[in-house]
Amino acid sequence: MAADTDSYVCIWLDPDMKSTDSKKLQNELRKIYNNFQSFTDCNECEKAIQSMTNDKIIFITSGGFGRQILPRIHDLPQILTGYIYCGNKSAHIELKDQYSKVKSFQ
Image (tube, rainbow, N blue to C red; front, side, top):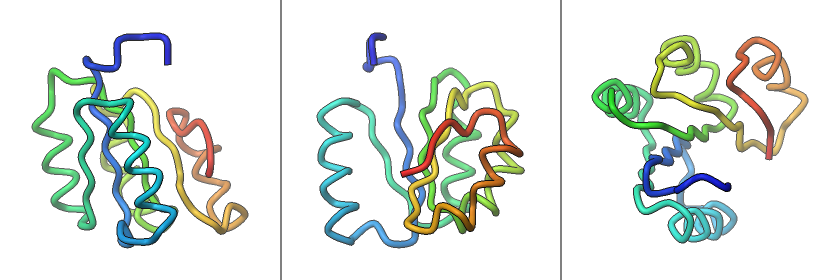
């Protein structure tokens, strides 16, 4: 990312933040973003996002949680872009089509 990552908040919402792959990616994201936050609860994550009215948020979510939270947060101005982190890409591909801020899948 070419922009100054100090001005961004990276938020990751996933029920399984303890998997080996998730831990590796979290460590990499912490090297990039000074403000990295992870959540395992949709409501807690949504409250945090809504309170960050002056921040620029890069949002990562699992496909299942994405279905729950994206309708509620997608149009918030602090959400810049979103990514779906899910092994079952075909089950959630419509999220990318439905929500313009969702840019990619992992």
